[in-house]
Amino acid sequence: MVTLESIDPATSPYISDFPTANICNYSMSTIGGQISEIWTYSKLNGQFDVLGNAAISNALPGFVTEISYTPYRRQYEHPFTFNSQWSDTYTQTISVNGTPVNSSSVTISTLVDAYGTMTIPGGASYEALRIREELTISGITSVNFSFISKNGAQVNVNAVSSNPPNSGMISVDGTTYYDGLVSSVEQINEIPNGFTLNQNYPNPFNPNTNIQYSIPEASFVELKVYDVLGNEVATLVNEEQNAGVYEADFSGSDLASGLYIAKINAGNYTNTIKMTLIK
Image (cartoon, rainbow, N blue to C red; front, side):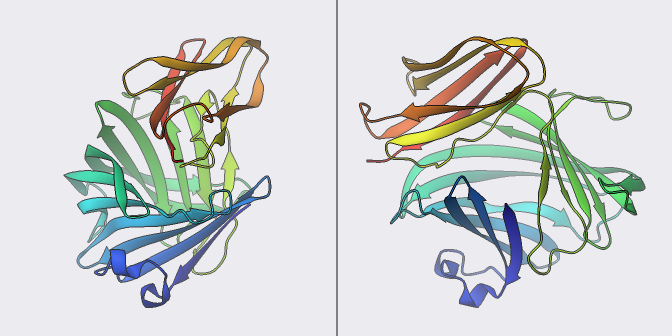
């Protein structure tokens, strides 16, 4: 279960790390008894900029993970209309208890390229704009589409291809939707679709973490973990599996603190995630 709530930035616990923020969204998720809380800090000043977020988890007591965007990540430009477009380059830095552990250059191009009627699960329909977002981080490009209405109803999809067509049907590996304004606590509904490799949880971790992935059809699945030098440190899955959602446990008890990469190969699908081990 995931909940969202808008709160006063001045009363939030990490405002000192994002002092120019005038918007703060708080979210809490509960997965298998593990609770994580995230405060996302933004600034509205002629455009809507995301400054970063701070996260804690009961699985890692005493650790605060922050992601900051320098100078910012422009989420929306105002006025926000059909054919609006913008591009930005920023630095994304991940810190744990104030110490940077990873920094990446990110380029993002955004285009409001369509409008029409959006129907969400449950049957409700809204007039909406479509946003095409192309994001490149560490040389890897991904494309996301968002459909946004005036009242806050929203659908987000992640394209499998890094160069999907702008019309017709596409393959996606995840869908999230919000029904109506998120001014108080609201349920977020998730619909897994296609091949996916989800971010490990918890992250950072010590020494155990869980990696969830899904396959839409019977496939030979290989899930391995590598260090930053490309050395294989663990094979978690190496077998034929039926369609479904799976979880793999990874233990870093015999490894040094640092950044590790989990890589999945399933059918023609390949993806990676970065994981941070802190001891």
